[in-house]
Image 1 (cartoon, rainbow, N blue to C red):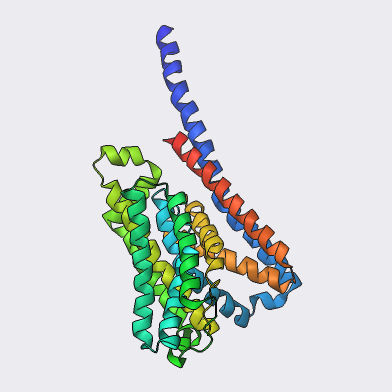
Image 2: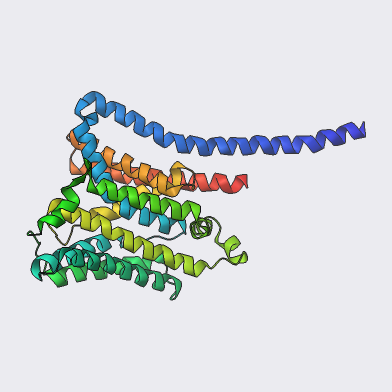
Length: 337
């Protein structure tokens, strides 16, 4: 009898634990697929009310806009993967765009030299952010907030707040031209996506970056160079953010001081969605899907004639949804382990 009771007790606990684990995994899957369900309903409603939403012309616009915000989104996602946050991405994009346009149009430099200078300043800003976080031990939120305001001053300093409207044709072609009938911004997005994906998923650096965001103490005990990898994420983010700003300036054929303001919110939303969609894995792929979701939502609301208040409301709501989903997903994952 006692033997039978002993066996009953020994098997009851594992079964209970397995059931609890399955329940938590189910909750994580519900969060993951719930996002797809919400957007599927949104697409269905917009398509019924505005059939032009799924026209080739409109889908073309959606993917170009997605391409433009994808670079800043990938950079932000890499920083978030390591447990940080970069609030300066929008102003980095704006600074790169304005410096590029200023050098080309006001100072007469060659287009490609100006673009290289614009990209280089993003890398330098990323280095500065990385040093403040890893060497001065500043909170990433505070450090990049300071950088954001410094860049605002920089933008007004080099232009006096005056927009640059005259840019060379070969520069405008970057944002509006095509190669093999595919827009150049989409080609660039594809290249950066592949490189970012390979870096995060196929290299030890990328895997360690993801581990830092998941369990920094375990990484420290394992001998991972947390400071170097964290520094690397900010440099990559600064570098990638410049492409969004330069491409937007090329597409609009104008550079202005507030050009990068949209990128902070949009890039952060796409990156947060990227961490949720695949439960913290394949964040670059998830971020691309998140960017498509976000841009198509903005596009659909525009077709429906929604005012600016609904744009802010929907983006803010989507951001809160992504943050809460990320919280509960990580909480469930921690309990499963």
